[in-house]
Amino acid sequence: MNFQSQNIIPDANKGLKMYLRAVIAEENSALSGPAEEKDFETLVRENHRELLVYALALTKNPTTAKDIVQDSFVVAFQKRETFDVTRDFGTWMRGIVRNKWREWIRKNSRYQLSEDDLAIMDADIARWQGEKATGDSSAFDRLDQCLKRLPDNLRETIHSFYYEGRTGEEVSDVLGIAPAAVRKRLQRAREMLKDCVDRKIEAAAAELRNS
Amino acid sequence: MENESTNFTDPTPPGGALADALLHEHARLGTSDDEELISRILVRTVNKTNAAPVSPAAAHRMAVREWMQLGGAVAAVIALLLIALSMFNVRDGASSDTFHMTVKFVEAAEGDIQVASVDLPKPDQKPARPFQGQVLPQVVNGETVSSVTIEDQDFNLITYFEQSFKSPPAKATRIDSITIIAGRSTRDGDELIFEGNVIVTHHDFVLKTDSLRLVTASQKSGQVPSFIAEFAEISHLATNSKASARKVVFDTATSSLVAHGVVSLTGANGGHPEFDSASERLVFQGDTLKILPDKVEAYANPLPLEPR
Image (cartoon, rainbow over all chains, first blue to last red; front, side, top):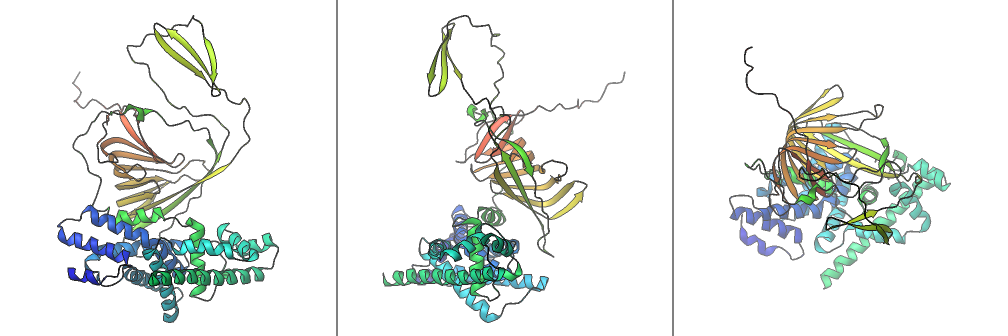
């Protein structure tokens, strides 16, 4: 481990700095000390939910997504000595999650995602992780704000489907609209929310760069 | 997704799929951390090397006696139990079995009130005599307080008034989520037996043992699933305490973890609260840890019988 490498870490990369401290602490001590454990726990707390979203978008299965994220952190912990400190921790974790997802696809013969789509998804998650690492907000906080700005008809559809757990058919019955209209509203709302979250995160990042 | 038919899934990744996943996660936990997942990760990483220490001191006397007091009386008694029990092995070819159990309770506000505390008379206490003096009741904050003096000692008798009719049922839903990871699992009748590096994760605690029996009572029988672990180590998250015990029983109805034959107990600040492991048990429930009297087990005479 080259301790000099810590000088190149950008200030904004809080997660990486924490992990570096943990690795250095470990190298300076023959035993795993409490400081390292606390820092790894902090990294888990900082990254787990964005990685869950990533795994959920890849697998479309909540249980599998949780297992993949859990196994990925276990792998990261086991291989922490091989971690390249010049790299971003979030990037490293996404790579492990991707590998775990590929393993799952191979074993379960699930649908494959194109490499281009995977790269776009990866870039989005990277921005969301960066938002959490550099500021106090997360993509979930941004989503909170964006939901309030949705038009009423889209918001009630999203609320009924995601937050009240109704099926598309049930939403159709409750709102008294055709299933096709529900599908269209959900699609439109997701696009608007995604744009809104990305815009807010980009604006926060620009503000941080300017300051 | 569980609540989503294929028709309503956005077919165009990556943006739609990501927004869909973000919404599902937001609906599930809002902006909060997933404590269950974090504890599952930590128990397999940083906490793996930090097993709860087994103290050589086998018996301690509890200094803080107030822990024996049961917390506030639970007014609601479970009227209806809806048990959703699901079981599945998650990963094909994985080195361990994962069992996930969700227990859903619907509680009603009406019903009997549980006993709040029991004070057994001490041997030197005198038998009670009827009081023959004057009682002057006063109403204080909605309670009637009657002051009496017996043999130079003042007593306050507090009378509580409660409604004499039953309240209409007000239902509340509680969902417990329990994950069990083990080297292997086998079924024996109504029981599931987990063996080899068993890790149980609940939002209140993490339990590690080598052997665990899960009683998978069915909805039909009206029983609640529970598990029994032997020689287990408990990390209780809310009180930040750790314990190891010969026998640990989890009751899903009350969401309480009861440790019998406790070998060691480490409190929040690393201290070792004193208690008598032979006659007391630990009860972890929610964010509380209580030490309560345990049933004394009668053992057979270990000496060989003399010939008659």
